[in-house]
Length: 234
Ligand SMILES: N[C@@H](CCC(=O)N[C@@H](CS)C(=O)NCC(=O)O)C(=O)O
Image (spheres, rainbow, N blue to C red):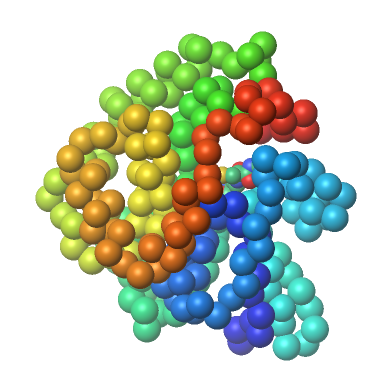
């Protein structure tokens, strides 16, 4: 069974670009995209909170033949589900096999979505979003250092010897790690040539181009400056 209708709540170049990317890789253009004005605070309105109590993007809305409407709220879960649901696209090692390739793929998917993501988010909120009084220079320094000393070397080891993060074939894990690398580079991290070359390979994919076609609409700074998001809880 597959949904009759797919709709993505999205904001340019954020984690919802991971979901938009895997959707283009799997279902093509057959889904709706609604921009959620994060800087306008739409994610804290009662209607949005009913759909997503975590007040963020992405949300993947799925309409089913029996009339149900369901929502997924985690970008990495969306990436994993879509890659496994369309095995003919060969975006993930087969789920039914206990293989080293499957283990490595899941490892990188979740490394990107949890460990690396956590560090990038700390840098982002403390540098650009939290009010001055809550922003902590030591947190920024700590996670910038961990990115440089722990995360980047692990990724470089892979990307200096292989085309993609799990080897020479593109996988759905690249939708998460690739997005993270664009995010990191926007903050002056992952600056080594191997990361630039990796993004250049990824950007040749038409699904990547479509997913990031609106990236120019993203600004790291809040329109009114840090701390202007009165409802932001992080
Ligand atoms: N773990 C979630 C995190 C989603 C998330 O925090 N999205 C951010 C944009 S990258 C957001 O919408 N933040 C708005 C807010 O919290 O106000 C995922 O990966 O889907």
